[in-house]
Length: 359
Image (tube, rainbow, N blue to C red; front, side):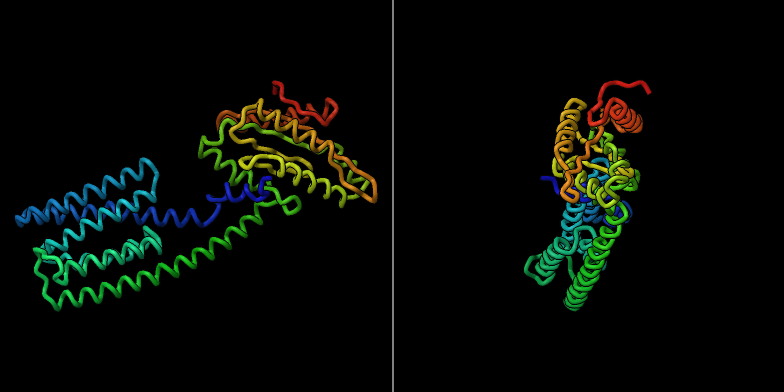
């Protein structure tokens, strides 16, 4: 059976501070990539003028790879993959620069921002592993284990490794507590937004969720199309309220919501749009498939009931079905589904209407 809160997990991403954090990380990535590449190209040119061809080529290759990686990230929108690739390129380039000594033997001074950048782009765990590997590589290069062309004074190496280790630790502490704070804020944001977007009685998404989150998500991606819209209205609901009281009406609504959510697929979404009105989105579903699913729900609702003081109270529903092939036609499809739902009521209720109707 479907999890009744699946709709929130699937569609709430854009409605949380997760998206803000992704934007922060993406902005840092592009800023560091393009501005860093410009600085690297500058020193590549300066090294070439100083007849240090090897260093110039190392820097040029690093700048080109970093820039190309950032451009590909923009084109293909696979941010996490390109964060890792960029970290690898910088990792290798900087070790090569340390090996040569860098421009006027200043390579070590350019390494201090790296621990923080690795943590920001790769996260606490992966960034921590990369920083440890980077520090170990530096130790091997600088303590004489590996013969290098650069000539760093022993005292300078000792001070650098100590200060760099402190920088790594401070960066870890800063990013760890930022991560913990972000996780707590995200959880709080999810709770508050879920309350705002959830109908308190049926626990279904409400009209605010439909207009603010779901429509925006459908507009942003074609992955949900074709979809079938089903406008549903519980029959004689006012009479049920007048005859048996509002508590019975509430039970009818809760029973209807539970029955539908337990019998639709995980990718589908049922929204309560009004008092006894609901809008069902059958994702990746043709009209023929949607009609069959709607008919199944109609039969289940017809057979169900609420027990009131020993009396069985049935509540049927009327269904209007419309197909939508692309987002641009969504508003029209919603109007068609609504029109067909009213036709179902006019034709005797407790039925599914899906034929063409002139608006």
